[in-house]
Image 1: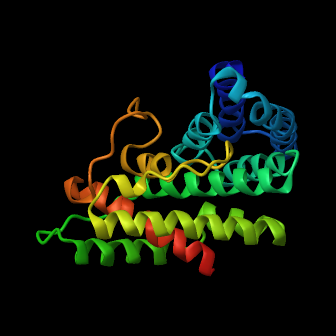
Image 2 (image 1 turned 30 degrees about the horizontal axis):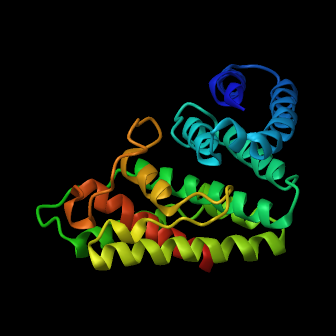
Length: 245
């Protein structure tokens, strides 16, 4: 499992980036993306089953995979869509439907968290919670075709229902942390090895995928910077809107 994160996945993502950014025949690009998809179908389920024995987590794989896709401006939209779709399809091959639903919820939540981290909202002189929420809602209206909404729509109906419930639970914990101003309220341990903790999702929205601060104790919402508040509020509204849509 460690080789997946350290070697195999970076190699596949590099190949995908080269394929999507170089000029060439579209059929060749499709063949290359399809081959990468087949590799993901083989690698991802095996990683999910054996990662715990190697002292690794599903979040480790998600942070690396999603971070390489959602934060890559050079990668074309079709390639990004295809890679995420292949990853979601790979999760459907897990041993149980519950495992597949938990893993899919984790994937979509991490995609939303990185979309929230990536937003660039204009600063205002009156940087308060009300203006932050207004800006977040404006960004959401401009981002109706976000990756997370598209992924959830592409999931089969039974999985979509289970994933939606998990996303609502994430949103509930985030709203609790905002209202209580406490860091402890985002510490939710799901009990499932394939369902990432809300604290991990929140950390992606706060500091992005390239930080080495996974173990850092989250501060309370009141201590976040203005940009971090925007990201957390955007993530919370995104979770709710994705389920609604």
